[in-house]
Length: 125
Image 1 (spheres, rainbow, N blue to C red):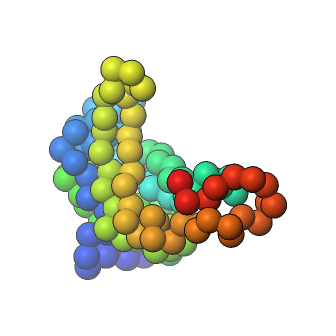
Image 2: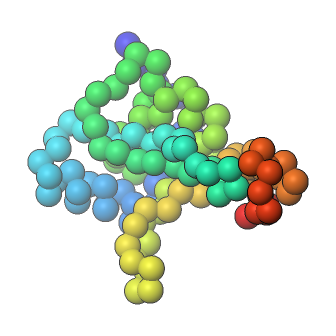
């Protein structure tokens, strides 16, 4: 059974919504949802998020709609995505792509000196 969130965890900008819908139409993915999840990251690279279009919603997933796009989040990622905003940017230098800005994830990132790798990197990027 799908559990609908009472509060919208993730917002999508109109540009992001348009990009997701365009991809789904192009690939004929009717009925699919945008899954947003916490992706593995290196010791000092901070938290990274991944996104996928899929039609496989698990029983413990949370689902809601943002800007006309069905969004699915697993329980582990949910805590890192409270208040997140997804945008689609088309930068002439870096190219086009999605960008996730999560204030919750930023507040939970490493602080300097907490690296487990023992390397010389700075973890407050």
